[in-house]
Image (cartoon, rainbow, N blue to C red; front, side, top):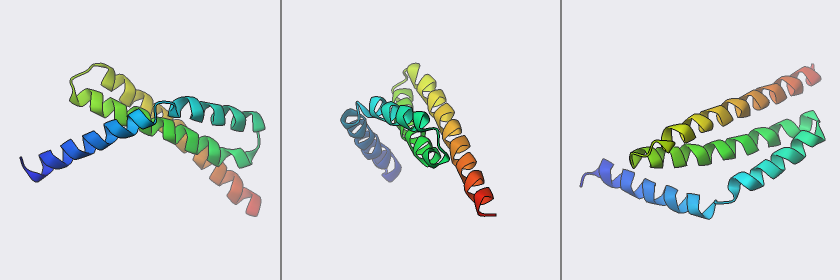
Length: 104
């Protein structure tokens, strides 16, 4: 087995272990997200972005692993990961714009 194949096998094993340990990650992050959205302040934007990014990472990792196993659900999870990352970046950018415009 070559270096790349071995590295992929090791990373896949680590990601599967991480996903098993993070089985409640989405539920926890959605609770944090709900709290931050209820806060309604611009200070909450970085927290919102972080929660969305964490959920995106979990979906992305799961989707890649499922795709490697030839499961159709992998592409759905990758698509969800991209959507969560998109919204994470939007909140991050909005927070940065607000911070810079408040300084000027």
